Length: 117
Length: 111
Image (cartoon, rainbow over all chains, first blue to last red; front, side, top):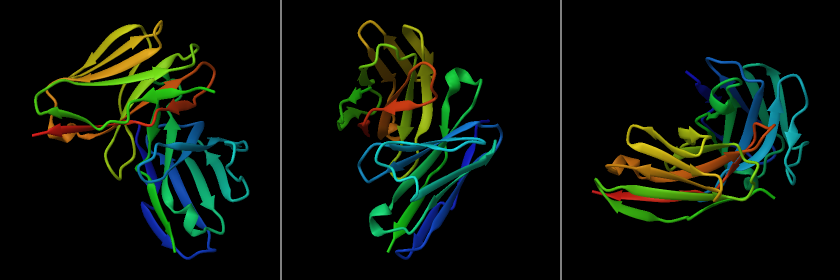
C-alpha cells in the first residue's frame, strides 16, 4: 500500500518550453501532496504544498507563476514548469500524505528527472 | 527557523557491523520523526518513523528518540552493502504535514 507514481520519469526539453509532471497516489487518497526539487549532491528542497481543491502554498523564493501546481483530485497533483530554462534542470519529486495513516506519513514518488537544453 | 542537523559523512562501516546515524533538531514542538533512505538517483524511501521517547525496532533497524536532548538516531545492525545509501532524517511539527529534512548522511558499507 501507499504507492505514489510520477510521470514521466525522465524528460528532456528545449529551453522555453513547458513541461508537465504528474503525481498520483495509486491506492489511497491524498488531500495533501508536496513537490520537492533536488539538485545533485544536495538535500530535498520543498517547493510547494499542494492541497486538493485549493491553491498551492509556495515556499519562499519559488515562483508560483513559473511552477504551476494543480491538485484537481484526491489522487492527482500536477506540476507544470513553464518556460523552462537550463537552470530548472533538476530532480523533481512529489510526495503524498496518507491522511489518518501512521503519523501522517509522507510517501514519495519515484521522481522525475528534467533536463532542459 | 526549524533546523535538522545530520553529519554528512561519509560514514564507512564494514559489512556485518552496526551503523549508527545521528540527527538533532531545533524545534522542541516537533512530534514525529522519520528516517528515509535514498539511493543515488532515486527518491527517498521511508524506513521508519518514531514519535515516543525510547527505541523502536523493525528488523535490522532501530530508531531511538530522546526528546529532552532533541536527538534521534537510527541503528542498522548487520550492515549490508545494499544498505549503502544516503539516510535522511525528517521531523514533523504539530498541525502541519510538512517535514523538515536534514541534509542526509551518506553511509558506505564495505564488503
